[in-house]
Image (cartoon, rainbow, N blue to C red; front, side, top):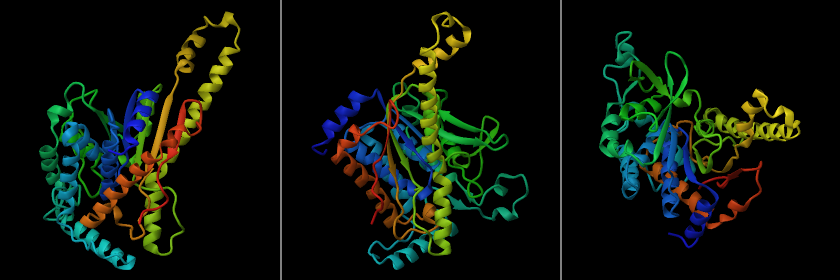
Length: 383
């Protein structure tokens, strides 16, 4: 534990009632989130609510579904397992070589699957009968179910007083977003798998008569769920994004595809931030207007209806950590599971938290709006 950890933890506790960890989707890039959690654990900052989409839901379930003393072990076991069978050359330091190695690793994952995660369907989906489960996806995710049931203590996850877990998914028939929340239902492995069932790679997951796909189809960032669920939340919100909205002009077609993916999957983050600012501005303006209204209107039903909204006071510090583009990344980075890349991503997340907590002045920065602070705690790039 660093020398600054006690002061950071004390200040966070003093400023906020709770800590929320918000985890974006992004496949293999999710190793960055595991590193962020390790950094938070080092500093004694423990989430009491985790909300995630896709790989963020899997990481979130590994965190919420285990006691604090075993969470890091379970995260390491998962990421070691899904990267163990994919080739990688840790000593390839020259970027052109690393890029080609990463492409080979991604191709291996696509062709042969990832141990403990997914396997190609045999026979392929194109040869399956229409309407059968085998016809609906390229891969079979049965190995993921076995991994989740081995590494997650579902009795602990669904027990009283644990870490709240919320996972975003989308109903295949209606197209509506839905969050499976441990406050509202007993969670099982199918709920986690549904949040990460990205088509056409992974099959829809059947839950209580309905089929669900990856929540990232609707929104890859679950921050809006936190804000809508708790409009007067008093919390440190650690938002961990796996795709960066900012980036350089692409130099080739592969970089074009990668840049498009970054923009597409980071878009809801920018929308959510703008949404927070707009809603808060309107709420504050409404409060000022209502204070100017004459006393004889205070018993008006419309006045009474609006009063709770203006009385609510947000107190949020959104600490935004972003996995910046690696110099040797490619368009296939979200399914490039080589051990070398997974370790680099984990180390990058850990280092970003250590750097932020070594300079805790970010907790004293100016507010974006009264009661709302948003900070980017990440450097522009990783080696």
